[in-house]
Image 1 (cartoon, rainbow, N blue to C red):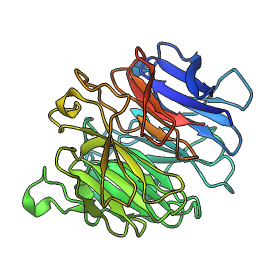
Image 2 (image 1 turned 30 degrees about the horizontal axis):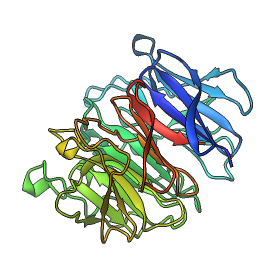
Image 3 (image 1 turned 180 degrees about the horizontal axis):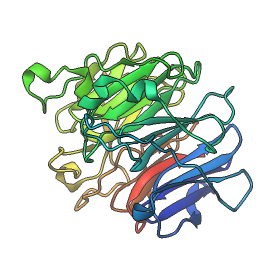
Image 4 (image 1 turned 135 degrees about the vertical axis):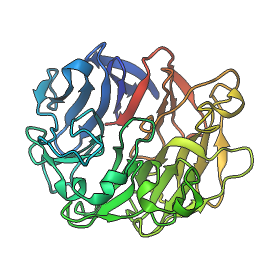
Length: 362
């Protein structure tokens, strides 16, 4: 079966094709322009690309299946705002995450943005609506920027069995879930702990910094989180979270996590030393994998550079295919690696890409 992948970078959207058990560059779109997020909608074959054009604003483009040309569609837009009790400007800065609705919701898209707003489109991006039920909550005004000046929604975990159930990851605003398609929301970060806060606030769910949250598609109640202060797992659809202990020598800091689509006990992470040192430990690139629900972890290194490597894999820079065997990993230094056997072995696909923001299979 032929596979393809999208690689969103600071200077264009690169597309890869998998033939003869190897990946190779197929084509590039929006060359020279920052592509903050990409998405393939397997329901109808559409591809979406979100561009951050600075002075010219955020743009969203759509390409229909079996077409080469792109069509610009509407970008999410915040309503006019004149109040002075909100420190966050009501203005779209970046589309940081995009996901599709359920299989029985054709055309429904979700977009998470900086400064922390969630948008829904019912019509393949032709129009968008800000989810005011979340945006208007008083807790939002307590959210903080996690690496950016403003908070942002980087994780949108739609339950494939019930698309009305959605979990969000927000930096820094914890995890939030809805069970009615976005009409009502509740905090869902119980058990996470932010050691960067004063002790009396460390358990506050609304100030947690989950770097990325991933859902198991096969067992949708299982979720994984790479947090600013470690790795967490939930087995009850985010009603509670348990921190996992990694063996000595494997850092628990990082930004990304990929959940095996069929095995709820398997997940992959890419470690870095710490927030102050966003580089691999000892200059040696590695991927951390668990195959028993977080009871044990192993460090995968075969085929990855083991000296003088200073790459950082950001939130959306690691992806796993539907078969659970093929992985792609790309860094902010422009390196791209692939594995054909669940991470046991890696090979380099590219060395000179622009900084990579997101990698997605399609």
